[in-house]
Length: 125
Image (cartoon, rainbow, N blue to C red; front, side, top):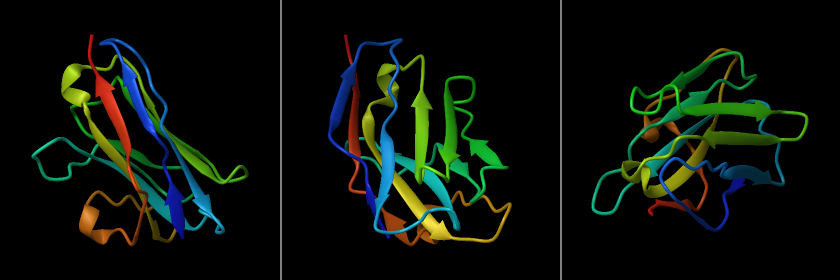
């Protein structure tokens, strides 16, 4: 599975972004998925995860009430909706996928097999 998250994005504080995560050549319907930001000079962090059929989601406390994660297995895509962005959200965001059974949430980056190349998100006035 190759995951394509594309390009860079820049918004002012309070803005919204929706970085895509679209696989090439494979279906994501049997994969748990997640999003991991990496700020400059820091280790990869965790913000959101979703089970393979979308019935379970998990968000880090830092983004609850601002971010949502969803997926459309018919369209074969997974989306992180980022609202009320703050400067501290600035990071390169990586989507990840791992084969999974129903109902499983994966929060540890080391447990993911497939990774996108990253989308730079910059929140600045």
